[in-house]
Length: 173
Image (tube, rainbow, N blue to C red; front, side, top):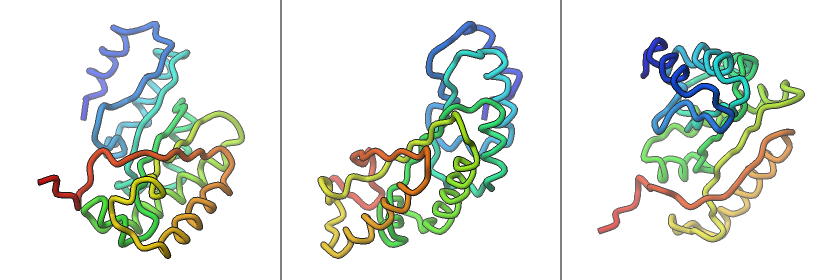
């Protein structure tokens, strides 16, 4: 995790900047206990930038912690959520953290719902209809549609389908 002084140095070297500013390359930004301060630094230093993070929701956070990110200048959160059931989530991610990810998803959706303006929330979902890498039975699709319809009830949340970039349960050999 980059120290705040180094982060400020990077921001200062690239200002003024008005494009997309993602606060990390890979990994989980929510592990950074100074993330809210870094969002505030980025917003102060680059007021016209679009500031975003990508998360797997693998770190427990509350809706209030997401509120702090939005209110300090975060413009967008992109989520990777590859699992409509605990079994599928574990199969895709290689860990059994569906309940934590779902709890975090509910917290961020509640936070987003309170934000009456601004802030984009994108949820990257595995495209099950075209990419049945897991060999799922047909009855599973009903659960997937139910989950996706639940997401659609939240204003300001957008979903997009993607193919898996990596798959914990897949052996390419």
